[in-house]
Image 1 (cartoon, rainbow, N blue to C red):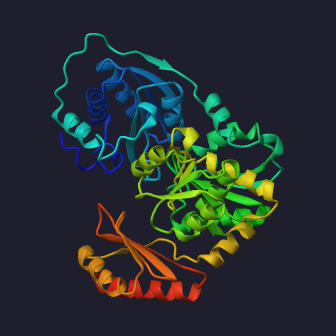
Image 2 (tube, rainbow, N blue to C red):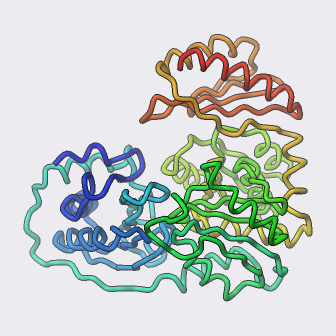
Length: 451
């Protein structure tokens, strides 16, 4: 069995049934058990049509390896994280393909304390064991218990806000027919907010398209609904709701870069002097806000396994990526798509300011290009050409994650994809929108020579 096509950098993901099916998932479950040697493991699944069957095969594989399974059923990825660390389990597996099309499914793994299992921390070892399929007999087969983790998960995430001090905001919520609607209904009972729900019903066929608000054309339905409802805020999630995305009261999509800065501010108000972890793509706004409040910014390579490791080593209160993954110390340093919007709404209630006002000043101070992707034929040649042209005159160069070049009044980060002939560009400046746009155009013109 060749599983190389569906074992990615951070998880397992592939087409059903060509790449992933009950047989392959059973073997992956056996391999995970042989590699980790856990006693008890949480298993959850998303709303995809294939998830029940694949979860059953996964549980069978774990049980045949002698592992006891805590089946938490239909949930979001963060609920597997929560079950693993809150119940003191040895590991957890979520059956999900997040924002992939409906014909895909996948698996996300953690070990004790919800520490990630990724390509550089065991995932490829699991692949090799699954492909070999040489599993021994187990003296005692594992058991399965079903457990409703959602009430304790709800209590935990609501612990990030003071419910009594919240005001009756009007919020448009777009679950994208993924799992977020089920979680939102549970939280709604405890909150004073008025929700306008769109694409709310969980539907594994994704009748309104793939739930991925990073795709620009997917945003308009949320933006339009915010304007029609005259709402204070819009929120959208991806399929397994480990990321959330924000729209201001005008329906404007707010780039994750500025969201990280606002959430950092909220956490530093609670914990002055705390460490805040951020990625290298866009940094000046976050670093400026964190230092202004006496916090300590910590830069980390992009990617959830790197961020979680960095969060843990720094004992950071909060960490955020511009890709809209947000990490929390009290959530075992894991990412959540529900905690961020709760903290954001409390911040709006406390300040009494609309989201647009909170971000407009930061956008003027540190205008950014947002992430721009270019498919090119010669990635190495393109990066070398950019380095040759734009490193001269710079004041700082970093290679923690791609190439980051800092000039006195502008900076950029250029990263290449691990799996595609693709480069990702982010540019920002200090209070000069025209300069940022000019430099972005210059770099893109150079990259276009390699398309």
